Image (cartoon, rainbow, N blue to C red):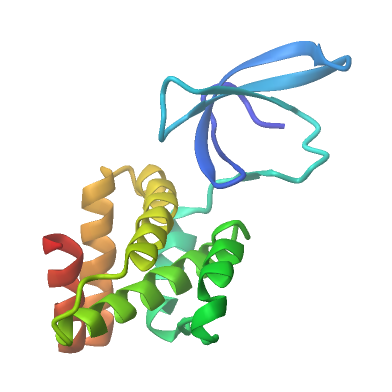
Length: 176
């Protein structure tokens, strides 16, 4: 059981446990969650987590290990017509690796468009922003950094791991 002021992930949203109400939901205790993305939003969720939609944040070591794996994580490989459905499924999976797949895929698709003097794809850009928001929000809490500092840290680590090829990624991410 979590405690008041613990950070958890509810579905895809990092939340702080603001309170624990006793016997509020069908005689069961409830967490009162405060969303880190929208501090005006509070959510009551049963403590028993029978729907398996609450998890602990990953650890700092797990964040660092996941960052090391980024160069090895594959991009999404599917037909163009199935891509948005694939993005949606991965976004809702709750798996951080799936978020990285979305980020890498959308980045590469947008980079290809830019290289061909075309406009960035709206759908790709929307899913890129959603995936980044979820991933970097959790990382920022774990690493005790701001969202932007966390994003900067991850990009610098990937550049360090991958070498000069990822300098373009850095420019794209920070100057789009």
